[in-house]
Image (cartoon, rainbow over all chains, first blue to last red; front, side, top):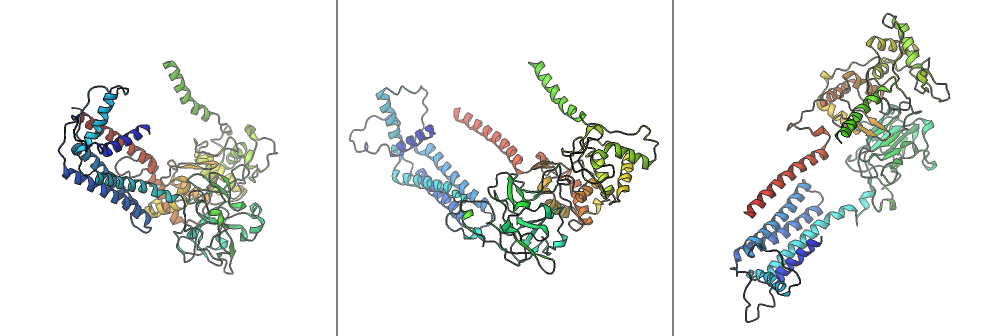
Length: 330
Length: 261
């Protein structure tokens, strides 16, 4: 870090240096051989740096646009192009704009003021071959600022700052039927205690975070739902959001003990980080990193014996974020 | 120093062998070869199964009972109506007999001969008849459908390449040693913590496809020639980065040499 800081200081000195000394009438003898200005290379460097800035701005724009295909690839191309242009500009600066010199001797002691002066002048005079320092500096500044902004932009993904309404929306309403992946309604009598089912809201988009639910049936003596949810499990059938409240993986593991006396109790488990939820007690967390229970969907069985939602989820679905507890699912 | 290393290596090699030897072994009647099936089944069941599953196959759910044969404190589910479907599976995978009813059954050397297994099946069926051993026909299954069904129903625990994994509180076995019959049996039984899938959930023809896929997954078609364990993008990424880093180091060395000369 310290070394990086020194490099930055050296770069600034290189670009800013030489200003006040130019007006002095008597030029001191040069340390570095004078270099012919190379306006062509300079132009290329300036253009490259501005293009780099443009590419970094492009990264931010692509990030901001929501429905764009192959977004990851475009983001990568934008950032890659940006860095390639900056790298090219730096190479050109090193090769064509400032003289290169190899110093074989060991660096002198810093106490020696004469030599310090010489080093300072080396820096100053190295930059004297540049003609449009201001523009060069502006281009470098633009590239640096834009890259910095591009690097900070993904931090927005850490949490929605403004529009959070969509995070509470689910397609579930009272009376909406539960259907399987082929669109067939789930019948209460077909749900056994031995396995688990994935269901979706009839006629709604399935890829929404609030859509998929996992359905299991528990023997009556195992159910320990909170009193407020006593009517939520007709015939012992319970439904929970299939999206883990930790990192939004699909809760696709179901522990169903063959012989509960000596085996771990029933649980819904997320395969990503092994958050384990208890379907008998309203989806409470019994193990793992999840910070809140799986949202439960109240159920009812209609006259035809088919499963329908009796309302919306008990809590907002999806991964937890700063405001997840401050709203109700809509 | 080297002697120490050799001793450590020997210890490492010996440890699993020692663990495998702690199992109680199987009790069998003296003239088991010549015994008629009904008597053989009854004798084997009483000696090896009854301490946990009860002499009448009703299971034991209380720890208050006195220890049975081999000092096993019996605890086990009822076997009434489980049929050849389950008995054949548990005995031919070596899941049973289990040393300790609290431990998770795992694949081991099969403890009984084919004739002995048939005898035990016969005896368990005499408590209450149950379903027969399924006969899947993977050759009539559809591989693509099998992959889809396996992803939907099985891959959560077993991984999409059927390499197994863990669920909190239990290990999930890899399926590389499972035969077609055993895969079909496990789907219908739901051994240990595994959910059980009836014919309503997974039809017999769907099961054929799943079996076909699992058998295929034992010999994956590794495009590029290197499967890297077939366990997904993270190890593949690590290997890629390792190779890329080596290449970059080589490039850096070349540039450094040219600049120095």
